[in-house]
Each structure stands twice: as C-alpha cells, then as structure tokens.
Length: 267
Ligand SMILES: Nc1ncnc2c1ncn2[C@@H]1O[C@H](COP(=O)(O)OP(=O)(O)OP(=O)(O)O)[C@@H](O)[C@H]1O
Ligand SMILES: [Mg+2]
Image 1 (cartoon, rainbow, N blue to C red):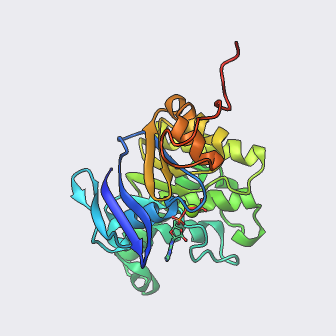
Image 2: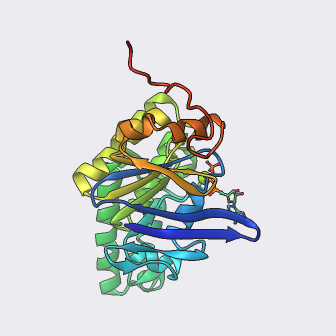
Image 3: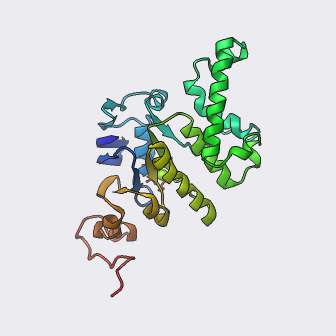
C-alpha cells in the first residue's frame, strides 16, 4: 500500500500535511504519534471515510482515493471499526457475519427467500466465519450474544469482522487500548499470526509502545500531521525528532537538544 503526499484539511486545520508511506506486503507497519497527530485521519483517508484534500492512496497499483468506503473494502482494505454497528444481543457469529455482508451476493433478501443458491452461498459464508472465529480464538463463543463477552473478546470480534471481508491490508486503530496485559499479549499474537499465517499486511495505530516494538516491522511517526520519521523499531526508538515529539519539546529536528533515549544502552 502506498500513501503518496496526502494532505487533509478541516477548514483552517491541516490534519495531515503531505504524508507519504509505503507498507510492504506481508509486514506489520505501525503508525505512531502523539494525540491529534493525524493517525486516525490517515486511516479514514485510506478507508475512504475522509476525502484527501491532495495526494493519493494506492493498493497494488489500484488507486483507492476517490472511491467509496464499501468499494475500498471490496478492493481489499479491511478495517476494525471501534463501534461499528455491533449488536450486543446478536451472537458473535452474526456480528462476524456482518463483515461478510459485502461479499454476500444474495444479501439478506435472497437468503430470506430461501433461494437454493442463496442458501448454499450462506452456508459457505458461515463455514468461513467459523474458521475466522477459531483463528482469533473465539470458536467456543460463536453462539454467545456479543454483549456478554469480556472487553478483550469483543475487541477480537471486531478484528474477526474485519478479517471476514478477506482483506489484503488490515487496518487496526488502537486494538489494545484499554486492554490488560494478558489481553494485549493475545492481541499481539493475533496481529503476528495475521501476518505469518494469512500473509495479510497490517497497518497498526497504537499508543502501547511495548506492543508496537514487539510486533512492528516498520514504523512511521506522525506529529502535528507531518511525517517526522520512518524506519525500523530500533531506528525509531533512537530518533531524536521522535523522542522530542513525544516529550513535547518541539517538532523541529534540532530545535531542542534531544534528551537521552528512554532505552539508552547500558554503559
Ligand atoms: N472530522 C473532523 N473534523 C474536524 N477536525 C478533525 C476531524 N477529524 C479529525 N480532526 C482533527 O484532526 C487532527 C488529527 O486527529 P486524529 O483523530 O487523526 O488524531 P490521532 O493521531 O488519531 O489522535 P489520537 O491518538 O488521540 O487518536 C485533530 O486535531 C483532530 O481534532
Ligand atoms: Mg486516533
């Protein structure tokens, strides 16, 4: 996926300013930065929720910018929506099934009419939903109402629903926010197995630095809508501009003396 020189303005506010990045196939590419840096805005542009004022996003040569969100999903960008139409009284299976909606030729009209081809298609979708649920460790909870699940389990349903759209690129915006250590570890393992077993590229926004450092192949850093660094976790951890951005000492490289990295090597 290539994000090329993307700018997003909301009136006088420039939320993204000429941001470019390139997420290689089959990698976990993290996007980090302080609050308000433009991370979610970037995801909203990629998924077609926001329109870029300038610049483009391409996936494998196909331009995504200018297309509607459901077309972008169909072209292979899956997104875990924080609060997307999750119905607490519906089962885990039904909630994951929402992700299949787009791929369901019959929609719910055909299956309601019990047309033979629609019934067959529905059965295939259900089988795939079961597989995906097992993949994220929810196989034993398929028939439970979403509402009784723990917070960590519900977040995994969101990921499963995004996977149910059969994405080539999976966008995860703060997947471990509010999770305890055990749930965070579990989500990290899922992110890694999405890359390893499914070969899906993961674009990951997260504030949990230890999680990021343990799963990311590459990291792009935003600050006030600008890309201030791009590199491997080791490079990013020791980048003075990144450290300055997080400590709020200024955004111009060299504007302030860089404090010692948090992870300074022992003497
Ligand atoms: N729809 C919108 N209308 C106006 N301003 C917006 C809109 N969406 C985002 N912004 C602004 O754009 C800037 C970037 O916001 P964004 O949500 O992308 O930040 P973020 O990096 O995701 O922050 P956080 O880490 O807190 O989630 C902020 O100043 C925000 O207020
Ligand atoms: Mg955000």
